[in-house]
Image (tube, rainbow, N blue to C red; front, side, top):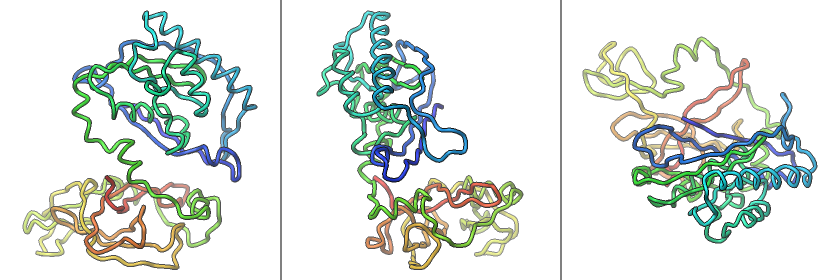
Amino acid sequence: MVVASDCRPAEPRSEFETLFGDGAAAFLIGDSDVAVSIDGSYTTSSEFMDVWRLEGERYHRTAQDRFVQLEGYVTYVPQAVSALFQKYSLKAKDFTKLVLAAPNARRQTEIARRLGFDVNTQLQDSLFSTVGHTGTASAPMMLVAALEEAKPGDKLLFVNWSDGVDAYILSVTEQIEKVRDRRGIKGHLASKMMLPTYGHYMRFRDMMQTGGPEGETTAHRLWREHTQILRFHGHKCRQCGAIQYPMQHVCNYCFAKGDFEEIRLSDRKGPVFSFSMEERAPVPDLPMVMVVVDFEGGGRFFTRLTDRDPKTIDIGMPVELTFRYMHEAAGIKNYFWEARPVRC
């Protein structure tokens, strides 16, 4: 599996605050029944300092913008793509789509035209206007978006830029139809929520002191209960069939002792059974909404509801689970499972 993920905080009131976005993409690599085949590639390496961040620093650094683009991106990307064309005797017209990483939309369009591509029909959307520039994940996310629309037989040119250029010739196979059910880029964009204020953004980015008690954790507790905390496993009583979380020695329903089957609950959905709202709580997004979820197939879970609009919460609303960062304590970053409205 290849995973690309990035979250780059931008310095407040900088131009990058409106440009940057967060995102991730993942691909399974194999040699049989593939949805996309790699038919060729060309790679160049260049120790070109354009964007970097020192260890321990919160915000990134960048060289002078015009220098970075003209001496770096605009120079090396066309050279690499031209070398790929020559190596495999190809032209721009041989490709259905060009997936081209770029520092901004203007440079992407400029280079695509220079390489002979039709920017109206062949150039893949950069996602800058809907997601933002997601750094490491930018080009992989564009590739995912292109594959969501691709048809068997399509040929894609995938070009990424970072300390050099990687260019790949990709062919879409019949197997692409088997992965159409992914939520992907379209699904996430269709179900995204807008933050109501800049203050919300500042609090979510931990750029504003909000106070409140610090969380608690211990390494031995995380080790002892990792199947419940990280994998979100519960258990099913072999005597009465009741599903319970957290795991206990005695069944809450039939009082059988120690006769359970461990089961996974992280992929379950269900309706909201009850909920409450707390207007004064140490969370970045008030009110804090707590819900009891009735899992499909049995079991209940009491947790926080995130990615929600308090005005639309109601009994019976379908929710799913999501793995989220909770707090840092004792030098440990703690994650746990929360509920959120089901995304399309």
